[in-house]
Length: 268
Image (cartoon, rainbow, N blue to C red; front, side, top):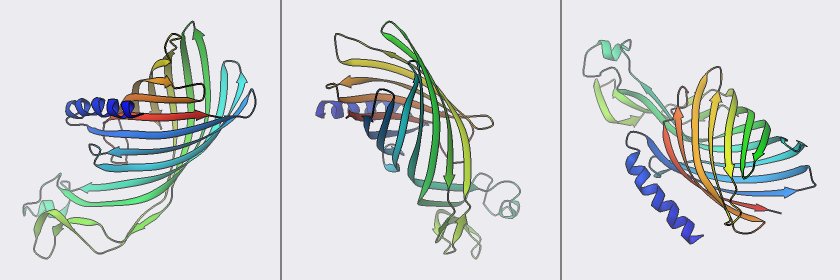
């Protein structure tokens, strides 16, 4: 485990340098799976993510799921995930704002308001995964529908960047002392993931690569992942991977991101 942590740090350092202009973060997760019978299984997963070049905890999550092997090559699954997010909200001045029109030093594109707060989301998902083996190579396609609900949340104050009394733009901002409520919202997303795995019998390593598309009335996000599983024994596996996430269109202030992940899986 120490060697894997050192390897994680060694991979993370050069990527953080190359990722100039994009964000860099990490993913740490623990998974536990129990095979009830030949077709039915249940699982539990806990995860922590970071962002802002590993300076900020992005979110914690805890999920449960169940899987059923419909056919030898087809598996169905369903689950629930509780997400606890570190939210950042920003708004910016544009040419239609009165402050910009008054031409008193505030330009279009300047920060207008911002807020940071922790909040929960509830996520439900249903998946179908089809796979086929070509010798040591396994190709799989997973289609997942996920529904995420974000409850209404009220914060005590937001940070604003223009002082109306002194008619001055304050670069560092200040709290307005007024409560603000972010409305609840729900979102449906279809996630399509194509994955390739290559099992090496002589050594306990299984390299893999995948590409995943996030669609919600249009392409919102793409994830590319490459990594490897290391089988400690029949029950315990450690996975180390690199992921690049490109954001096409979303309303969550999410950036393009380079991620290094370390995962531990145990089977009972």
